[in-house]
Image (cartoon, rainbow, N blue to C red; front, side, top):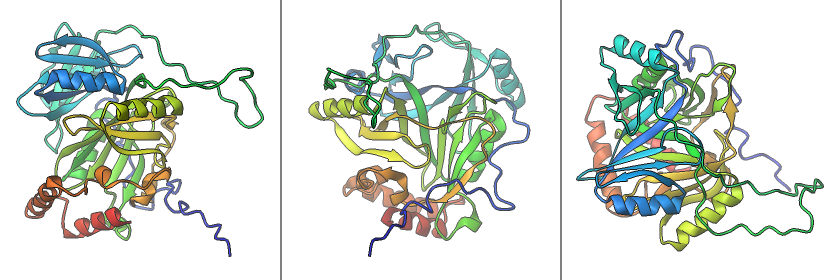
Length: 377
């Protein structure tokens, strides 16, 4: 007997909230940011960081002995700023405000001071700290880098619609050209408090909530959050927040032209000896085609293409969190991606879990049971 049941039928999140659940947005946020501006890191080896960045598809916008700016082909600010440090660390995101008035309004509301950024970046910034302890920068009026030549998507013969005749497809095995920064994922022990902070302060709105199976009544444990630009569509998520045993960076994602750019770029990275984490596949929440890699410092980075865009009219979806629900198609999520690969990191993770359970936060024993079920699903 053929089983025609869709295994993802209960994992898609077109189903909405039930009475009394989180609305996914603030009634009167202080400001409404427009996008991520860039991400900031510290690393001891800037040369190694730049070699990987070029293989991944970034272009170097600026380089000094102590600082590296990486950009995509789209106009605007750099995607990533890396400063020389004694250890590798993610130091925080920068969000782009609509204008300097929003930066000043946010500074006044939080008792912070707006300051001018260095001439290499230009503009105005205010530095905040979210409830998890992450430094969050909001900027405006930064220098505009000119657009670079982009990697053109391939012309595809789709079904019976032929747009290419007397010509072959031969994608070059070369770095996928990063177009722009898409999103960053952050894990926190204070998920609900941190989520509300971003909605209240930056005007972000939730596209999708995930909850541990059997624990919906306790509320969500992950949210995919987009910028509220009114009728102008924005990425399904600019920030994703997840409950976990530590406050830490999970991954960041960068858009490329299409599937062939992503796949050929992945082959190039593999040829250069870099570590593949998971992919290629297509996500459920956000719908992106994805491929995950780790840089030499262990930070996970994602190539993506064909992601969802939502305006401000869509309400949050709700779905159970499972490992099998991470993708509509593609290989199963790897232990490396899930953070459970054998090795010293597993022992460190166990210490982190024990430490979190001893503290007063949202990650308790019941939540731990839910997380274990997700990893085993």
